[in-house]
Amino acid sequence: RGGLLDVFRLELNLAKEEAKAMGVRARLVSGGGDGTASFALFILFAALQADETRADEGLADAGNGFIWTDAEMEECFPAIAQLPLGSANDFGNTLGWGRKYPGDQLLGFGSAQRASAEAALQEWISAVLDPASRVTNFDIWGIMPEAGEQSCDFKVCDLAGPRGRDPKVSIEGQKQLLMKEAGTPVPLFACLYFSAGFGAYMTARFQINRRKRPTHNKLEYVRQAAGILTEATPPQLNRNLEGVRVTCGGEPYFPPRSTDGEGGEKYREVGFLNINWQAGMAHGADRALICGRACSTREPAKFNDGKMDMYRLKLTSPLKNPSLMYQTDKKAGMTLTFEGGQGKGLFFQWDGEARFAFSPSGGVFSINVRKILSVPVVLGPGYDPRITGDPFPENEAVGFRFMGESQLDWPCETANPQVCAR
Image 1 (cartoon, rainbow, N blue to C red):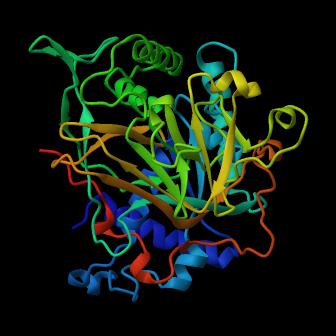
Image 2 (cartoon, helix red, strand yellow):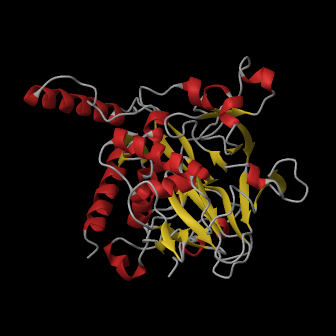
């Protein structure tokens, strides 16, 4: 009755039992760009979701809303391996599975090249399935309502407009941004990074102009970035991050050194890293004085230390930090508050997916992000500890777990802010 999802569920249960008999953890290959991991998690949860109307078909609630018990979720939840098929492929590169799909760089022509590419892919799959491949934990962050609330206080929509260098249209003699109802998206799992401001606006414009080839996509990002820097700010946006405030653990983080929340207009972006790659170029490391940035070893952004690595950027920030190294601050969670008035909002992005957030009443709204899950991932032969550090924290068992003081704090449908603009 459930179509392909039922087929996937049957295979998932078979894989669980087979892996238990072998004494290993099942693998799930997520093939695509950087946003694919959150979709893969969504499909996993959908397949494991209980349905009491079909209890006689094996979909009875195990007491946690799923058909697997808590112990089965922790011990048998598949470990994710990322097959890099996108443009930047930050996730696959971070886990050691490569920045390009297997066989991309092989030379040759015709059937010989296809045979070589097939052999490279088979070798990649064999490495994923190898019981000796290392498995570790991976932090997943999510957008959640404020404490005590059942839903978020903002809505989201997608940027519309014509393809090309500038998506804006002229209305009553003024260049305006057009918005459209957001499609039904996956829950807001932030696996890799999150930001508000320049990068999110650029990503939203890119989504209208997505190309077929990775190289063309990268050039499109450059074109859209140049457009933002040279065009006037549209009326739907504030200047840079004006009206944005960020707190972490109840303490002010952004704008820095501000007692009244003013100064955001000097900055173009604020956000955090979960992995230590962004757009195939940028890394993060703990904040340090200028003399220590180039000549000292600093703690990098890590994907399983329970901390988000917060950063804030001005247009001139890359000039102060060598080799596109962000100055980061380890925090346990963040709340971004926006105050812009009627008709105003801001772009935010997670893992390369952008949306426009706003309040229909023009009131103040907040985007709260905290750690919601820990999931197992498979490390590839190309994992580089120099970039992300030791992937095995002391005294931490590998396994799936929800994060929160109680089950009431776990992510749920009502926590999803995707009440789309109409």
